[in-house]
Image (cartoon, rainbow over all chains, first blue to last red; front, side, top):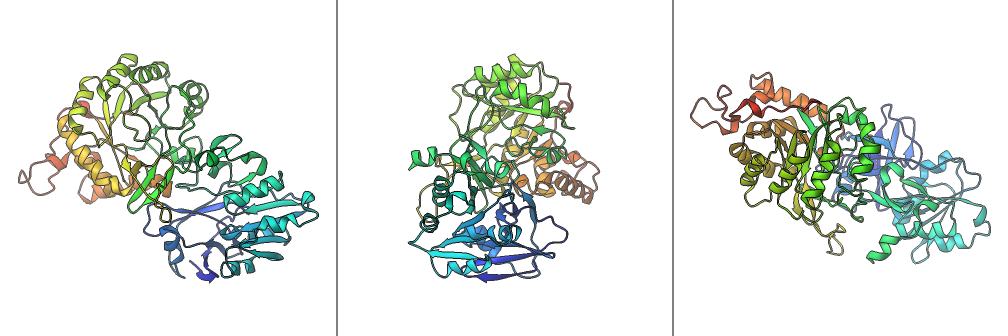
Length: 229
Length: 307
């Protein structure tokens, strides 16, 4: 660990790179969670020549164990894993919700700092917006999709989004060619456990291999989510 | 011998990991394709994980047609795990696998906690499978059976060539916020460190009851854990949950197991098989000269491609 610091209510873990391939934006690493049976999937937040950084929301036991790491601690990680964002986009617009802001700083740098729209639950959470250049921030109860709806040129924008599932589904409805960084509970990150399935192309498939970034058209409607509700 | 526990590794997604094993065990294949359970399928607990995958698989016909030729390219022997909902399901899948030279052994999954139990008992299923194939048959049993050693002995009598011990046991986790089950199915299968002493007890009890090779599994994460199972009577050790956090576990655990044995003055760790059963006072503590079982040489394990 090169260090860690608070970013609003989140924690930014900075890891010495030691020759690690950073992968493409939207790809993830499995981070060993000290004292826990399973690692946690984290997308790459920031990349420098010497460091990789991951933004962690310390909500559960694993993420809290990660957030407690400090400079000099040892951390095992596996990656980069999965499929990231396609970067051959003409008019990118980044969309983030809550901890879904995590992959956007690296994505923004890779795309030449395009505009971004970010939504947060509170002003404290929204301090993470400082990591993303050229960002417009909205706070609950205003939704990112409210801000998107006001854009006159939305139809010609290439949306690249990461956030909670309802936000991603709303973005998919507004922009069928959006790229969505999806999330699911994940035990292994490399296709071994079959735990992270999401309905992709109409059937349950492993998110760690097919995603986490998915074309909006592949996600379709929430057949199961709605059936379960 | 280090194997993977069925359902804990996809050799087609991670062939490099599978290549480090002494044999690869497939995810359980059922007669018909199964999509598996709805998400959420996994949850972490204090000392392990719960899964409710629900035997997602392409079905035996697509498996034989599409997966088997690709799995045959692995540099290690292939064990196929077979599941079903009645004895006829198992028999049919075994019959389809029987002529396939790529298949070194068949494991009968008689103990998935995430789907309905088959109509017949384990013994009837082993007998039906035995009639359908001459391949080595391993019966994978649940440690939750009321009298596991008796079932193990009956499975041996019905023609099982070996035992796989243990499958997961049922567990439940509730969401912090809602106090509702995390998994879509409610309960799921508990694995990882919490299962380790359960597995050890099962292997220990079955090694006394039957004279068959035993693949021991349940919470193994280090060479010492593997050595414990061997000492209790396992002739091979399989890795499960540890593969999720450490894809390098096969070679690491093998090396650690060798070092554990070497530290006890033994070249081959499997020479310590069954030493937990040696009577206390029959020699010095940890006597490796006179381990109790195996009682017959038949109990050696083979992963070769010929049955």
